[in-house]
Length: 445
Ligand code: SF4
Image (tube, rainbow, N blue to C red; front, top):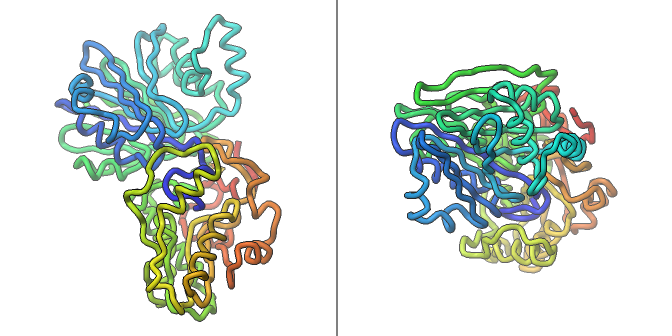
């Protein structure tokens, strides 16, 4: 991807986490959202319940930098939800017919303008008008929480993996298309739900199973129960989770992200008659692809970039020039690994082409004999409607140029993307259970 870390191409991504334990769960909640930080770096928040009250705290910034020990002491409880985001502060709290509850979600409402209008007609007012506030108001109009979720789902078009906390229980809901991941985990002390399974490993939980499309689950001191299934026309799991968003060590809908990326790299190597000295990733997003390419081709794997862990880790800045500068600062060329070498350079995607062009130039400038670019996902031709606000059609280089033209624009010796067929095959989910709109322009909803 063109920007290491918080990518500007996917500006609205976020992650949710929820946990119920027999003892104080605040430390595990903290580490739950900390391990989802890759899904959103601008805001973080935690809400907990101790059976007396619901507490809420949100911050601007990174989980580890912002939640101090005093915050965690104030938030102690046995039940809680957490959120990381590139877009807005969550969870939010609402007093409603249902009583007090906190809610956080990952996704995007397509018909938000229409829903805000309808809710205003009924006398609701909005403090932000953000999607999470719309979901909260729709659910809170009802007297019972599951009824509220069902009524909400009948009106909302879009994607949502959401968690709701009231004084004694936690509910989790995956939208009927199951666009975004939502996964159950457990250990001997309790149950959790998370956008990604990588958050479980760190807190000593194990993956139990993924929520089904449209499934509503309840977690409380008595354990976990599946309380309802919303009607689902089809599955449309976001294929970009395996391609880029999800962490390398996560398992989503039964498919390991690592294995999927390795297979995608292997597909790139199949029938690729390039003579090269080494295959290298653009860190971090290209690593799984480069490893897969290496395993399939037998070509030596070697790093040509060093990832600078001390570079600016602020959230996504708005100005393109600042984003480009930060992206450049994060990666340093390892000159000795590049001089006189014919390199296969792997990454997940090309958005505008600016940064891959810079990377090719850097390698050539320090003496690479050839740079052959290999991209794990097919050419990006359409923005996302379902939670990940892509920048615009105009910025997608593959919307306007052929693969050969892109190769010339980025000054690569050769350029190859995976085909859509190979991409789907390597992920290992049937094509009609995936959302592939980024590469086809065909939106499931
Ligand atoms: S449009 Fe792209 S990013 Fe959005 S859900 Fe579909 S595959 Fe994922």
